[in-house]
Image (cartoon, rainbow over all chains, first blue to last red; front, side, top):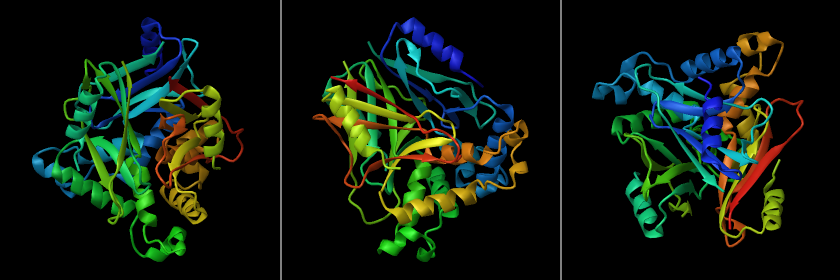
Length: 121
Length: 121
Length: 121
C-alpha cells in the first residue's frame, strides 16, 4: 500500500519546510519501507519473505505457543523494517527518483495505523 | 534486554516534550530494535538468526581470518538493525500498543552500551 | 565504499553542534549502513547476501519481467537498509569505536548518490 501521497499531504499541512519526517508502523507485524512502485517487485518481496520466514507450520514458532499464529509476521517485518526517516527540503519529501513509501502488513487481521512525526521549521 | 523504561527515564530527564528520540547500539555486533515483549518470540528470533547466519563453522567467515570469531554476529545484527527512531509526543515515547525497545547482543563478550539522543523542544 | 570522512566534512561545513545526521541512498538498489571497516567482513556480507537473494536465474524475479535484471539488488538492499541516523554531539559524528558509514550498491550500473540532511543547532 503506497502511502507517499498521504505523507506528502501531512507534510504540507504541517507547514514545515526544512527538517525530517519519521513514519513508522504502530503494529509489530507491519512495516513502513521505501522501494519502487512496481507490482512484480512487491510479489518478489512476498515470495522471498515467505522463504526466509515461512508462515507454516505454525508450530515451528514458540511465539505461537501463546495462542498466536503470526510468529512469522514478526520476523518478516524485521527484514522489511519498522520505520523510515525522510529528509524534508523546501517543504517537500526529499525522495530519490524511484523512491516511494509503502506500508506492508504481514499478519492479515490487523487495523492499519502509522505514526507520522515531522520536525523542523 | 528490554530498555524501554531506561529510555523513558532519559526522556523525562531531558524535559523534551515534542521531537524524536534516537537510540543506537554502539557496538557493531549489537542491535537496538522494537518488537513485542514476549519470550517465545525472542527465542524465535535467536533460532531464526542462527539459521540465516550460523555461528559455525567459524572458518566460513573471512572476517574470522583476522582472529575474530564473531563474523556471524555482524550479519545477525544487520538483520535486526542498528538503531530506532521514536517519536516523542507530549513528553512521552509515542509507541504503539505492543511496541517495546530492546537491546540485543549477538557476540557474547562485549560490554553493552547504547547511545541516546533526543532532539526537540 | 567508506563515506565517513565525507559525512564528517559535510557536518563541519553545516556548523551544527548538537542534533542528528540522516544519510540515505537515493537509489533503491543501494544502501547506506554502519559496520566495521574490515575487508573480510565486507566479503562476508557479499557472499551472505548472494545466498539470501541470488542474482540468478534472473527469471526467478517477477520484477525482471519488466526488462530489469536487478530484482535481487532490491532485496539485498532491504537487508542492508536504506538509511542511517547518527547523533551529532559537540560538532562531531557520535560514532561507536568501530562504527564506520558505508555506501553499498547492489546493481553495478548506477551512479552513486546519497542524501545528507543534518538538523540541530
